[in-house]
Every structure is written in structure tokens, then in C-alpha cells.
Image (cartoon, rainbow, N blue to C red; front, side, top):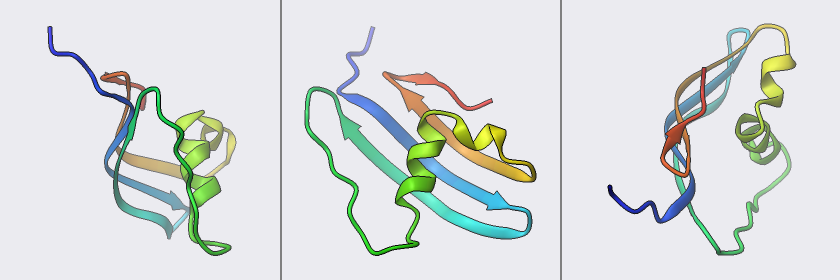
Length: 78
């Protein structure tokens, strides 16, 4: 069994609010047991990405996600 060094990982993650694309091909690896910060200007997608991790975007009508989100190597996207 391969040891996973990442707590979270995205692969080609895209998010749409209707026809508006909010996240475009996001690839990120967040290592386990490390402090990680998401920084950037207002409106760049930080909170949108976090809502992908905890599946809160599932509650938003007309929101669709493609790509993969892995939590300790396990796919968590529907």
C-alpha cells in the first residue's frame, strides 16, 4: 500500500456557478501534518476552494464541480 503524504489534493478541479466558471483547472497538494495558508486578493476563489473541500458547494443551486478532490488518497467528489 502506497503511503499518502497529502491530506488533501485536487486534480483538474473546475467549479461553475451556472455558466460562470469560478475555479479553472486547480491542481493543489496540501501535505498532512503541515500548516497551509490560502492567500490572495478578494474574489480569487479561496473560499470557493474551501467550500469544495467540505462539500458546502453541494448546497448551492446550479453549482457544478468537475475534476477530483482526494482526502488522504480517497476520492470525495460525487
